[in-house]
View (tube, one colour):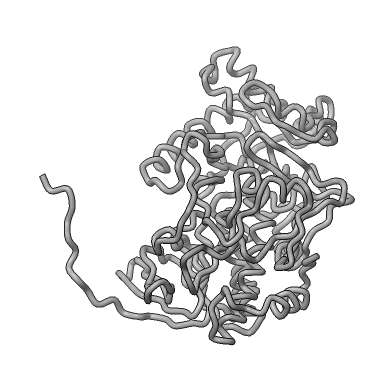
Length: 454
């Protein structure tokens, strides 16, 4: 039997040329595109779905800065602008466990549209990256597939904000991939309607949960102690009871987690209750299993809430996220890979492009930034080894597993993305490689754009 086919050579039309091409429009990619455009570059933004926002809009993760407390120190810049603009446009509400605002995943689609339009970015939705365009070891563009067929887009600088280092990996850059059995769990996010807000909140106030309650059953979470008595919108008891009474199978003891915003209309959004181990975000068969199993588990969780959570007897599914949420796949082997020591002990770097609070969430570690401690994000962590013309922004920047538990967070992705965008604009203007930019000029532009870098 045939085990492969050989495609004939074909001419691919070049449909667009630009200074900076950003591929992927999650918090990192969207920030990169905005920053590059505001620094004077012509920018195109490619996205495989029909909206910008990535993890926020496509997956339904609404908690951009749920780590924020009175003494938290942040970079500001575009990361904070996402939140402030959403508030102005009626697409955010106060977050339940922090001093931040929770973004409305549907409303943020309009926020992102407005930001992209105002910046003069060329929007290119519904296009899937399939291959890099190479001249030696330099990336000069990408090939996309869409309803229009196969097309090429060329640029002086490409920013890989795919989340999985897709461009870097297919161009031959060294990447590190977590074994699937060790990956952070994937999540199918969903939103509910029909909640009796008064009854639900009365139960929350009568039995408040804290971060130490995360260490139950299947999970054991390391904190540094100060988190243990802090409120968390955590739900576990309805699902434990459902298991005890046979509503949920006993082996599904990972159904538990947090809720986001409870609206006066009875909508309960950002239900982060389904956690699927072993789902590889770079394997479509694995993703298929995760989507189907995640939806099945979500419906079990909803039934448990109906039976055992006050205020939820009439609850119904409002919607799922458009795509499963992936926390962990590939990372580039960068010019500098961040370390656990860096994120735990306030690392400082001369090539800083922004700061991020001491917030770690993943691999069984939860550190909430309440003491004013923070680290620098170095520019080199976005430079893949062996390639020219490419920056990597978002959760695929270089680092070890605990560093990833910090830098994968959406606000940090936006900080790194803004740095990548500014550097890319300078490289395009000077017609130099991204490894040859003037860091002092990049840092000065970031400061002009409102970023705290030191």
